[in-house]
Each structure stands twice: as structure tokens, then as C-alpha cells.
Length: 424
Ligand code: NIG
Ligand code: FE
Image 1 (tube, rainbow, N blue to C red):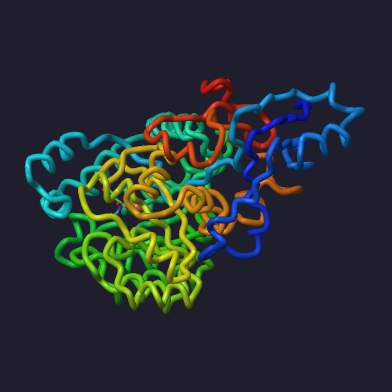
Image 2: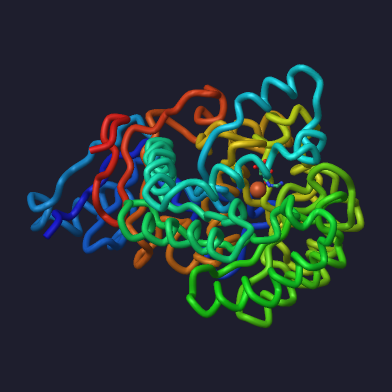
């Protein structure tokens, strides 16, 4: 039996309470529901009570000695951070392409010449389960050290039935064996693989007729994603792929308007996607349509930063009533980072979001983007005991002192997994 964990005297306890039924929008994204001198009791993997320290001291006057007490005086306590968009499971590394881009090549040129997603696909196809597991587990450990307790993970570097399944099986094993929870997305339509260059429709047939049914049958993913981009999959092709997923119970997500405006946001709205992600070049009409349809915008300012492109206009989207979440996009080509904290910093500095909005975006709205808001994303009674403690006195300082990993303690499912900034 693990001991109860009692977090006491938080200078700010940002509960994010009240948003489980629907994602925060507009002014709601600034509401963090902060308790000063806050306290939380975690037991049996669940949040049992949350309030002021005086309230909990009274409630647990008899049982206080049973608990492992964490003194959070001078610190900020938040829900465990949630990363709703990663390409976690992959092999290899692309620092050479980074260097090529710094010498003038573009991301799409590199990809169209057989590098980019294709080079990670070659490395991932060649890797064994064990190699993929080991490389991905290392990234997950780093996510945990950055205060992240749940991660969405996409396939898409296999692009054959067996290699896509290999990636998803590794994600499943990581979910079972690593403290971080993983939510899986099938993304067979991440690119048209080289061997189908002359006949992309045949590849789409394979995705629609073989991969999606098999992934769904084996329950290896909950979501289905597609890279809708000029030179990759058209909006029409993307729609066909997402509709095939829907028919098999896989909820649609979409990489939309990342490099060029391509009416991806519009398509996300008309198909009823759970989220549209990237949106650097989304049109005003697309943004309006997303707000109306309730599609969550998952914004990835690290990708814009790393591709040296202009970020998505998070400010405009929030003001238009779109629910915004943010994520690392962790992948070897366009955003090789696990630092959701840095991503929050960029959300403020490059997308015009406030410190409160980026925290909503990385917690409760990120939970909605992966359909987990009933169990994570806020510190409320009955939710999972996933809590991150930052060594900063308030939520503004977390963004102000940028580029620093301020994580002190992480509790996952009621167990202390990071203490003093180190894995336990
Ligand atoms: O989200 N845009 C497509 N997929 C990834 C990049 C994948 C890669 O370059 O390996 C993204 O940016
Ligand atoms: Fe991505």
C-alpha cells in the first residue's frame, strides 16, 4: 500500500476546477481557480480533498501522521501537465537536417527529397520493438522530469501495417510500464511513403481498407490523424481517411494548415474533428468555423519556433471563442523537445497568450483534446492523483523566468515519481 500524499502550504494551488464538462474558452481560459496556502490529499491514486491548508488540517487532524507530507511553501501546485500531441515513438535523430535547414534548405524540400518524415520512417522500420521501447522510454522519463503526466502519442513512422502496429504496440507497452499514461493515435497517413510515390491513392486505399480496420479491431488507438498539407494529403483525401476512422470508432484529429493555408481548419470543423493541430496558416473563416463547431485548437509554438516560421495566432483564436490547448509536438524533425514548460513560454511570447491561458491550455484544455477531462486536467475530488509542483511562487513567474525547468516534484497516480527535480 502506498502512503497517502499530503501536499501542504502551496503558495498557489491552481486547481483549474470547474472545466471538466467543456473546455475553457475566451475569458474562461484566464480562470485558474487558485487557492492560496493550498493543500491536497492524495490517496488510492485519487484526489481525495482539496482546499486551504486550514481546511485540510482540520479534516485530517486524526490521519495526518499516516501521510507523506510535501511542504509546498513558496511553490506553485498545478494539475500534472498534459501533452496532447506527440510523435513519441520513433527511432533515430535528424540533427543533420537541422543543419541543412540552417544552411537554407526548407522542411518540405528535405522531405520531398526523401528525408524528413521518410528518414525517420526508415529508422523506425529498421528498429526492433526493444530499440523503439528504449529510445521512447528515455523521452518519457524526460517528459516526467518536465512535469508531464499524460502524453498523446501518434504512430506514422511505420506506414506499413506491421510497422504502424509495431509503433502502437510499443506505445501500449510504455503506457503499461511507465508512470506516464499514454493515449494513442493512429497516423498511418503521415506522408505518402516513397514506394507509393507514383500512386498515392493506392496508399490511401491501404490506410482505409487495411490499416484502420486492423488498428481499430486490436483497439490500439482511440484517434485517427492525418497530415493535411499541400504535397502530402489533400483536404479531400484527408476527409476520406478521417471518415474511414470514424466508421471504425476512431475519433478524428488533423494536422492542419501547418506550412501553407489549405483549408484544414475548415475541414476539421465540417468533419467534427476533436482537434485541429498546428494551424499556423489557418484562415479567419476556418477559425470561426472551428469556434462554432467546438473543435479544439492544439497549438504547437515549438514547431513554429524550430521551423523558424510565424507562430499560430493563439490570441486571435481565443478571442474568436476557440478552445486552445498547447503541446510540444515532440518529434525528431520539427520539434525535438519534451519541454512543455518552454512551449508555455512560447505560447506567451510568440502567440500572445497570457500566463493563465497557457496553463489552462496545458492542463484542462489539453485533457479535453484527448477526451480525458473526466479524469485529469484539474485538481478536483475524484480525479487522478496527478500533480506537479513548481519551484516558483506563482503562475506568472512560471512564464516570466522562461526556458528553465522549474519542476520540483511530480506525483503520478498518487506516487511521488519526481522529487527535488530528479526521478525517484
Ligand atoms: O507535426 N507535420 C507532420 N508531422 C510532424 C513532423 C514529423 C517529422 O518531421 O518527423 C509535425 O510537425
Ligand atoms: Fe505533429
